[in-house]
Length: 196
Ligand code: 5GP
Image 1 (cartoon, rainbow, N blue to C red):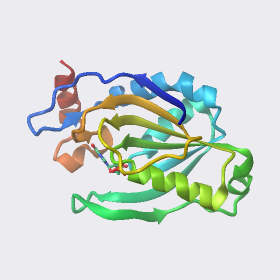
Image 2 (image 1 turned 90 degrees about the vertical axis):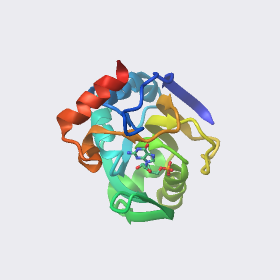
Image 3 (image 1 turned 120 degrees about the vertical axis):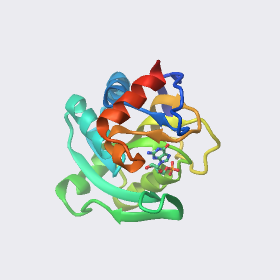
Image 4 (image 1 turned 30 degrees about the vertical axis):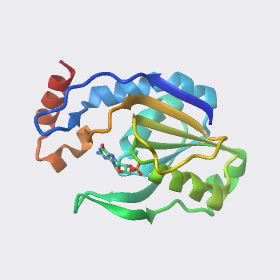
């Protein structure tokens, strides 16, 4: 891979009593902020945000990178049933006919998601955007990369930006606190305890 950039090495965090690792809003924001200098060297022209988990990270990055966001939605893990699907479902893609999309062959695209688990979703997204609009260059940025054997692969010329390498445990992010039965204050308290 071209520029395979890991900004922060694995910060040891303790799992909560439910076995999951909780990240506060400030944890997420800070990790993304630390990634910005390396991402700026890649000089992205636009962000492709993979929803749901990539939307808030993409919005935080936009404040620094000042480039437009195109939102897409892919599903491998079904939140409603808490199960893995056998393949990636394309719930929503961008309009391939707009000027910004038609110009992608001249542009550097940064794909943003919250976590690289098996890499299946990210591989699908990279391959799909190559198929539909063939950007000049592709970068992939994730807050967390789980240290595990990956099912998906990136083409050799993809630049990969990782905020933190983390163990193969379930990560809980502030925007999904309710999925784990917590209000945001409880979520933030669990995140603070995990850091202590
Ligand atoms: P993949 O296995 O394709 O890398 O990850 C698929 C999707 O599963 C991710 O985009 C993310 O939405 C979800 N996922 C995987 N691991 C975690 C995790 O630890 N926490 C959360 N909240 N979502 C995860």
